[in-house]
Image (cartoon, rainbow, N blue to C red; front, side):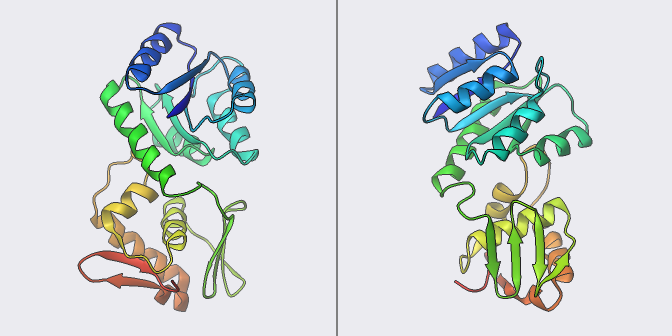
Length: 225
């Protein structure tokens, strides 16, 4: 992959760059948020950003927000020394696809990059900002969901699960696939959590919840494909 590594700790940046290049990644390095935004704009072909939150000047969270605000279809893996639920939520809501807490093993970073690469191969991150099935409409830009025009208040996880199902209409998705695509890796969950959140989602969607079909022995799918 063509990576942008945004890390102000020069020693860590050197080590990570060497290891990533040994894994045959192409790596650009930015020591601060301003440089990161400049490189992301000026460099063609960047596929993923490894982004430290605690940067001098423009924070990593703000860098992620600006990249997403520009519609950049880049995978973003955030690095941070802070491990509270609120910190993870802030980073993920800013547009991060995954979250890794320092200190970490390089093998874990490499595995998460591979997972992000697999997601990218499935198609563009945001090919269509508005997704629909029957009376259900989901607008990614405003993070608004409606059923027959009536707003539905969903939690961030319910929203991500619905988004995943809407992106694959008619396709049976296993619980593991839904976990991989709709849950951040930093959150420890089991496949049983999918069943619970599908139940919550169906309840909030009301009659439209029937569009989420159970596929016996597999998982779930969104009707309509």
